[in-house]
Length: 289
Image (spheres, rainbow, N blue to C red):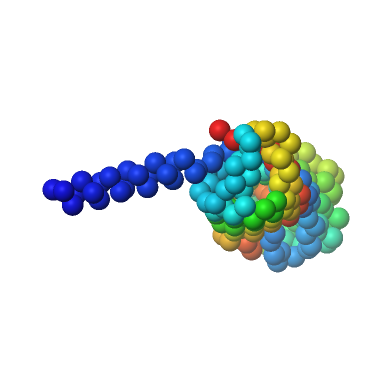
């Protein structure tokens, strides 16, 4: 019993000392730089885009420290950093010239036999450009190390998609070929055939959660007895494919009125894997609590 009391007293004393030495910070941050989607295309090319990152953070530190008046100045310290932030990613797909063929479609002319209503759709893109914009809610879990003024953080981030859209611009043609009657339909816009320019469509892209490896490093300046300013560079790299949709055709024809057709995102038509990539500068204002 006496031995148990000694062990219990030792554990409580260690926890008390740790709590006395611990420092907690709450912070707000903002970052900007390259914030894009990385993917390979079966046709065409991709260009990256910029974006922003902002949110709140929470850090918990244990380590050696020196007390100078009322301020705590860290000499060496390990800690854990977490929080929640919103990050925007942008990318653009460009298709110079490409032909896509969708076979075995059936039109809605019920007066004709089905073999005469079966057609192959020939879609050709000309200078077609699509901009993708997505936003993720990111939750970091990172180890942080400080020495004097400098710090470095490394760990993972989990991203939850909150919005996604694509904005196309360019032109394409839809031509239909009916093999059973050896006939082409090229100009019937009421059937969704012909030349189309800058057709407006802003549809959502189905995305899944994202796992990222994250690294950040920089310096810290004390700007008050309880406030600090951080400045540094950060880099995030997604390790999984965030695209949930299976490979799709470019054109979506409604069964009742094909002139109201929509187009799918280039990501679901051409992309193999889609990952997030960010690199930029971040500023963080922190307060001891």
